Image (cartoon, one colour):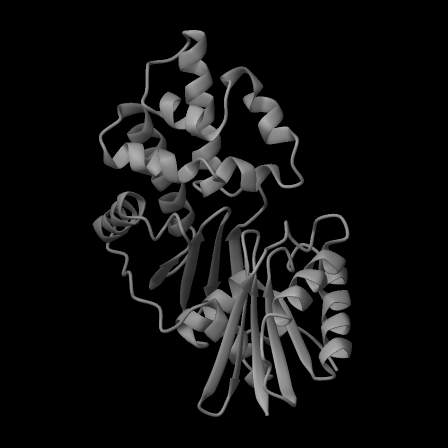
Length: 296
């Protein structure tokens, strides 16, 4: 009997199936999120497509799915659980990718999972076993300090320099490598199904420019770190840092230093979101159960 773990985010879909000592895995395309239009259908299609890349050990005992946007779209989470359970004919648990990240990092122990990737979300499990969330409100109302925010501020700085409203920056050359001419950058962002993900594509260039000493990029990164530190101050540690932005040296090192300056403990995660999805699938009575939808 195999346990299937799914980590479905905006930038990718990872699936791992474990049966005894045997493990197989695959990676596919992500989706904007369950809260998006037809989010459950898009998520299901992404999962099925990625499953198609696996030589899946059968039968399947249970499936755990961490999907971006599940907390904001409970009806879509229920629909996704029903679709996956019917497709694999096995009990299916669906929760947000923040919960599976926390479960992978802490395995039900108290602490705060700080995820800084395309978006930003902090999930805390306190000593009383209560889960609470800070930020994770999406690109238009939240996600402070995220890859989307860093990329967006970087492109704003490029256009300000282009207009003469802001200082010159090496980000201009980086933006031209991504898209030219600069005058059509607004359309480049708008003419996509996932504008936040499009903006986040520029974040690695901002981080690289900051590491190389560009003053404009360094200011953007420092402000992003400040935003995440303020979010951490609203929660309780210890803290695990995850996500592509948090994993970068220029951002992650600065964030760790700022948290330690405040006397806040930063610890290494025990596992990742796939481990958390497997934990959710295997443990129906965990501290996370109030945030999990089960079908099948």
